[in-house]
Amino acid sequence: MRNIAMIAVLRPLVLAFALFAAPAFAQGVNAPDGVAAAGTDVVAYFRAGKPVAGTPGHTVEWNGAVWRFSSEANRAAFAADPERYAPRYGGFCAWAVAQGYRAGIDPLAWRIVDGRLYLNYSRAIRARWDMSRTANIAKADANWPRLAGERP
Image (spheres, helix red, strand yellow):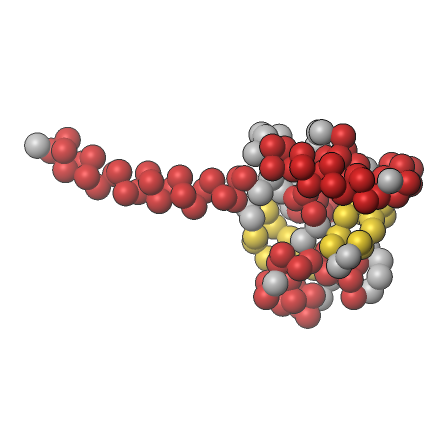
């Protein structure tokens, strides 16, 4: 009887964990040390037009990672609308995702296309990505659902 009561209590907890933990993992954020976008303030790409280092004093936890910002205003903007500012493909290299795998990024190798932030492994790789940007975005969009769920 005691085991049945224990199962009745644990079953909803396990189900709740599965429902809430799975979406965060499924997003596949590039945060090898727990910090997304290599610690760069992703809102600054839009507001300052360049990468700016974030600080540990201005952070938001979202999608299983810590996102750093250079100011309270940028932190608040991200917290209000993270989907607007978060880089595509979880912050992994956009060119690599188009090729069917995940790779890290250089915060200096970026583009904003149609209001979305794309990061790349290096400026040389970004130049390759730029040569067929529309096709690469389409390929990456098709590959991302599979790659997002892969373990690092």
